[in-house]
Length: 180
Image (cartoon, rainbow, N blue to C red; front, top):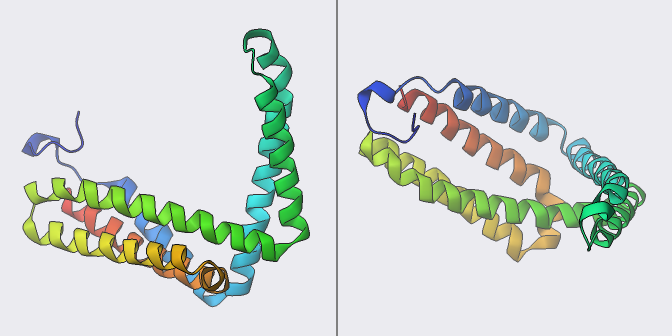
């Protein structure tokens, strides 16, 4: 079954989009209420994920050696991931700036994808299409601001993430109802 089909038989309420939208809106309000804790949480989570990923690469190195001639890449990647994770744990400032760039790239890509996929909404309603397109363009503007001002982005990252989550969450809730 194709989720982008315009056939009446394939339409249904999009519970996944509704739940994701609600969670994004709730997360947005939590970040607005506790911005300093939000940034520290971002850095801490990224550091832990990076260290765990590094350990996974190191653990997989011996298995890769048996069938992959360039298994040394796993070894280097594992060490780099662990070093980056430790750096983030030792310096929240470096972690915050790096995460600002990562979020900027993520927002940019996600906004472009959202704009590309918004065209299927014209089959449902021009109003929903325009609304969705406007929200994705707003997300793209936020992404561009983050890319152009990384220091400012690091300082205001939590607020921008909260606003983006609010916009994207509302968009997901609207899409959930629109798909029925």
